[in-house]
Image (cartoon, rainbow, N blue to C red; front, side, top):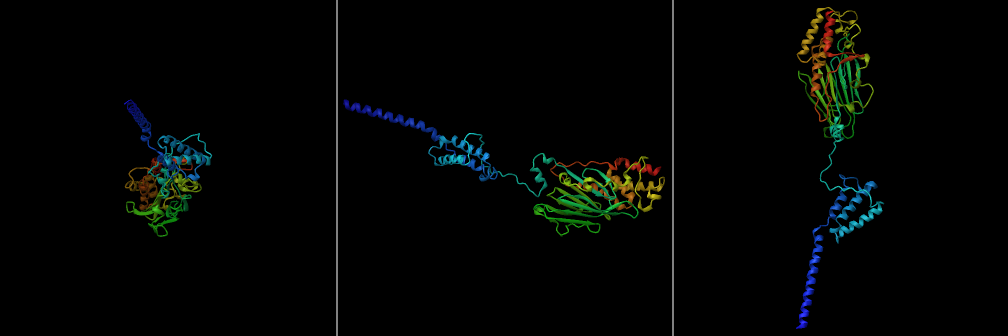
Length: 431
């Protein structure tokens, strides 16, 4: 019985030690079972750093950037080491990291950056053939770019991209715009024999080849033909219609053609007013001002081509151009003789006619009166109306547009505000 009691005691003690050992091992191994091996996440972040949306390809990644990425990969594996004991993928990654450190001469000490997590979102796609898309992708600063407006109409009157307003002779062919994207040339002819007044009877627009957006396209309008297609017979060009033409009516029976160049952020309107043409364009200022040289839309008319009717001399008298070859009381030299009631009647009729279409006596109203006084052509009065409608009709944009200002009529350093123009004519006629 003594030996049996001792054996039973020894068995109980052994059993107690086994139970204690099992409990102790369970407690020690519990953290291992709770902590998951996250080596797959480390691998995914490392691979994502070389994806097209995350960075450059591995073979062309700069050494400095690659070492930073490699250290971040190594740091991620160390953080998950406790939960990856015995994981073959983990041990393979650790071995590969050591090889890459040696292969690229990277130090384990240095800055680290977290590898980019895989992302399903794609970077914004920039449409090269859309000017606004290119600008918006350039950042907030580029989005403050402005549009400029240029118009040529009537006698002709010129509004430049810089909001300067002139009335010019410019008989013959003259360049309005000439840069590496676009060329516009107008041809002006005398309105009546013996008068200095001219008007536009031909407009040629050349859209130059631009990347894959469009091949070179030429549009030409004359007083006999206002086509709604380019010279090659097409009405659009380039991919995704980055250049296209639309025909419409500008009101009061005026025919018009709109040309939209999406890749330049540019719109053009050509109108046929009676026997003559008008031209208007809205174009980004950074494109319009890229090239120098003679460009009426950019620099205005040469000084010797500006009509003197818009200049005050030292005696504060206004010298109009010769009117209609002597039909309304011309004296020697082709200037109006003051004091004739016919002149006052002519001014009143012109003012009444222009007020039927233009309610505000701004620079366009004064241009309308001037055209009627100069030519006597009732259809010519619609040129100023069409030009004002062009300014309103040009399409809006997400970019900041330059707000139209009513400019001064000027020439040779002397400025006359539009509101004074009619008063000066009346002073001349009533003296």
